[in-house]
Image (cartoon, rainbow, N blue to C red; front, top):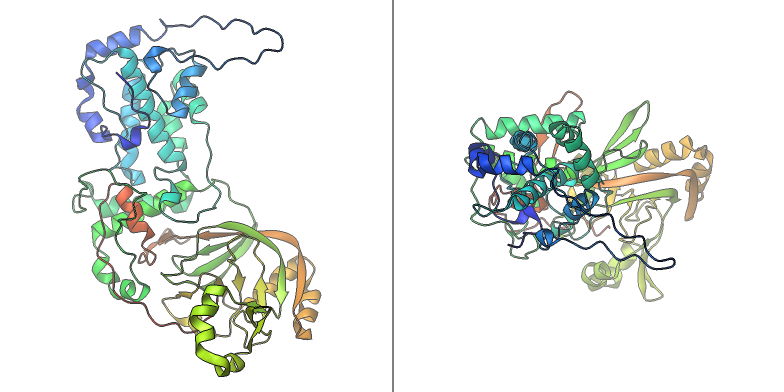
Length: 484
């Protein structure tokens, strides 16, 4: 019988079902499996002829249907010997029982195994279950690129095959699984909030999907608009909806590298605020204006090493055609806009949509941080108003702070006072991460859950088995300005 390739997409046994059906494998099967753990072995391969390219190791017939790359490496490293014993399999069941605290209690990890299947297929089934669960804990159950069109945040990477081998050899499977998810205080706070939201019986009030979610499908619920989301936030804040948001945010944190840059700018595009993090220094925080729900700010990771004083705005062609050129010559004169070389540009100055400073983030998507003349937007509770770029509160002061830390404050002030467009190298590269976090915890562990303005977490929650969320709104608020 062929083996299913990737366990999370098969109709497997959930953790509770594994607990309830431990004896379904049969004590005799476990005895056979345990007795056979060291019975199989492969002869060492013959030494290759000098200069010959070694052939890839042949896959034994018992493993012919196995395509999971981590599982293949795991068994190749073991010379295709079985791995599991009577004592190790229950440890996996106990590890899976912890899935609930990670918002993974609706995910099934165990592949189907036919009744009376040979012991080696039961062994492979356990391996696929362990690797699927470990993968979900270490780097997420869902591929972020099936949720968002653009995702360049640095992912967490773990050698799962080697980790499982060491865990089984040392009898430390539960410890290994427990070491894979994030261990920071915020993740723990979100986890505790999730457990509180689902209650002792689990997320019973959340709808149960009838089939695994196809996260690549375009047939998803429409993204909720910023205005409608804010207006219906109270109605959406049921325990089930809160649980869905918390589970999605736990998954988002599992996607990320466990050790982010020590000095960095984190922009929370879900909450529309910025945090500048530095070692041994209190974080700098500011409100920001980020992309509307029809111009989402993407989840990207990039950096910059220069700021631009008195920047020009070279208007993207789609904005120029739809929102500027149709308004006519009088509007363009009033807004200091002109056509240069076939493209629309806005002259530098306080009227410029980029304001007085641009943080020149180096990414291929033309997403950057900048000032704005529309200062009143920073006082709004709902700040998803831009075309995708990030407008920063007190941007000039923030730029001066960054330049001063690199000994370039005077250079920046002179460039700003000149009134001319000038680049100032701040003497170091500062990483920037755009993070769509609609749930987060403060230093005291207090958790805030926000509306899912972009609708991304609705789609993610479905992929995690938590069902569809409330229906979206119907209209967008009008643009306040045409800035990036």
